[in-house]
Image (tube, rainbow, N blue to C red; front, side):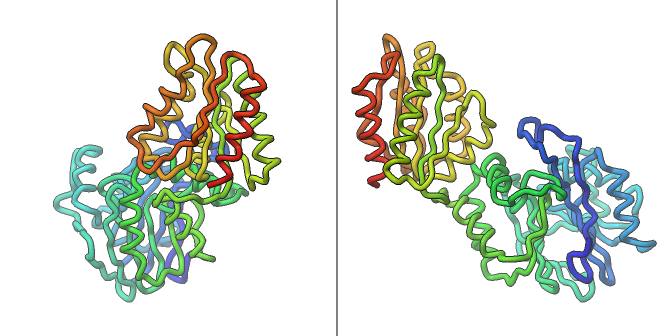
Length: 385
């Protein structure tokens, strides 16, 4: 695949993987992207997962067609991108490794060597000339590891972004970019919004025609759309108007309350209601929805004087990702000592810029007419702001 006249794609599709990073469900697989820039000197941009060593080296050899690379540029040290550094150097021992100081320290951890005799250490603002192509390096710490760099080819106006702007799914998956990119972002990068904002600011002055991430497709049309989404996500803004509901239910009574609220919201003109059963849905998709919508409802049962385990896990997923800037409504259920609302508020107390509706719905076992009236009031409050 040609990215430009001088840049070729040599990555691989992984259709065997079931869980990315050991816990993200990826029914459409993953792509591990790698690129080659051809010039007087040839630069290879990152490697791929160890399960695809031979395929990647064959792709590289085919693209090189007998030529020898001068550099391997390592932008990110997660093993799905760095596992083949040693395999590359065994094949091309005269090539030089280019990476950040922290990346070389990680290489020592992974491989037992930091390539002290065969490396170029780059930092913010450094450049590397390949001939007519000049590579400009930008540090991107905690997007989403501390050693990350991004690389801008000022000749072809191509930005190599490491894991940023990536998504779940192999390149031959026929699916919308935003859904799996959003799940990927909030699942993997979401905690580091401040750091993403800093990188976006640094890159804002560049003339970018194509974005080449380490996962997912090359982005080359309507780049403003992708950049705007990343700005919204990393500033914890609202992407979609509507209400997202997250619930657990033991005997169906809390679910009944959610159904009533969903109907009330729709009847009152809510543009979108997204309902997530936390015991059955993909937790990463639920997290994605919580950051997508500006208004959310948490509905759960009191359980062992605490809250139902799936809701507890969900709230932990949110808080560890710096959940903020949201309007929240609470529904609790408990037969003799309901306290789920109190527990949920306690778990969220470290989050920034959260506001809560005046109405909290307390169900004691089964839904009553008074509860239904409260749910109607809750719908009004959610739609009034």
